Length: 58
Image 1 (cartoon, one colour):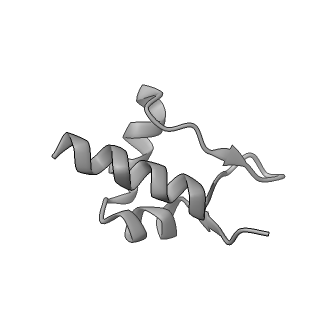
Image 2 (cartoon, one colour):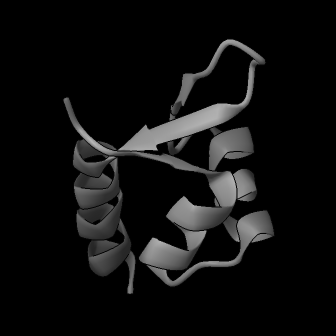
Image 3 (cartoon, rainbow, N blue to C red):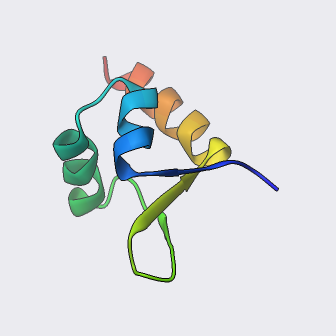
């Protein structure tokens, strides 16, 4: 099973702010899974894909 990250930890891993990652979610650029409380959860695979997308944008 892959490691999971909450919004804050995922943002830190990606070198983004928490608000910046939330903005990407709000725009529909990123679609995280949700935990039982409805909070966004990211897997390591999600983070790899987001990093690739981020690298293309910069």
